[in-house]
Length: 349
Ligand SMILES: Nc1ncnc2c1ncn2[C@@H]1O[C@H](COP(=O)(O)OP(=O)(O)OP(=O)(O)O)[C@@H](O)[C@H]1O
Image 1: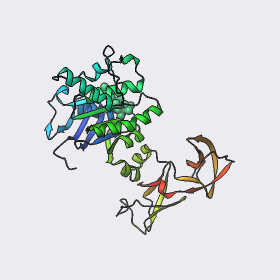
Image 2: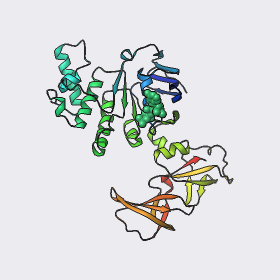
Image 3: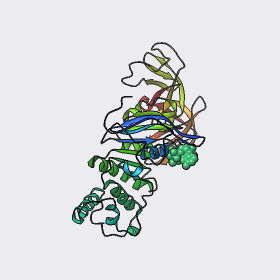
Image 4: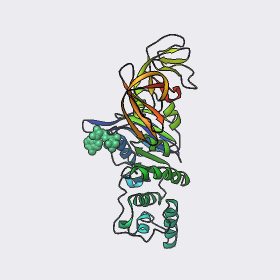
């Protein structure tokens, strides 16, 4: 990987707690102004990595650099990083303005008040300065915490599950707002979340951490269309996986043909166009199976969510998959399904 001169460079970083290796030889970089999300299942090492970048956890091996400078001997408070956690932990005895202005030292009273107002505008809470923090809703409190962490203009903002304590509707709304706020303020940020949808919304690139190792770093679109492995695809929500063979540039399997990804100049390793092979898997995405095809399959369960019916069906090979249709649909014991090839991905077996 090419390490850019500017911004953050994490190189071969390993984080250990006694015998437990939480992150193993992780390498990535982050350009100034870029937002990178770090996603992965619970226990995959996301927080440990973030803490090591902040300097809250020592690196067992490897390096964290900013603009080429090794930060190993730079203490947390001199790294120029801002931190925002799940519970923003506002100072309860300070007003909103007192919280936001907390890290603003060396400014005149007037300049400080003006900067606080600017930040409250940015996070959508104009006029909230005099409010007691105890009177804020959870979403408002988290926005104040964000304003406080942005106030001193940290060169790097580290966010660890900043929205996960909020309810789903609020989380979805604030995710979009967070993206806007980070863009407008030009903030360089590392954003930890276990929710890939949140990561896709907020970040320019997404890094998938699985069991302590970095499995893939890509743009959201590229990650979704071309997960590098079954494990990454499964984390993103693809599944079940069905064995396939390549024939003339198509992955052929029991439910139909799936084109190899656009731009895939060569088939995945171990395969050859025009020759049968058992080296591939097709992962079904959430919309890959639609009602109204040829193949009759038994229905195991049905639910109506967000205006569409999702049916759990049993595929010919015995695996359980989800077939969807718009609107509310009744299901007798069987339905006919078809594959939408655009909703499936091809990964190495
Ligand atoms: N202070 C600690 N002491 C010992 N082990 C730890 C410590 N902190 C984390 N671990 C272990 O390191 C591994 C990675 O944990 P980490 O919290 O970094 O994962 P995570 O991906 O952030 O998980 P989550 O999404 O659940 O917060 C886990 O096996 C965890 O049990």
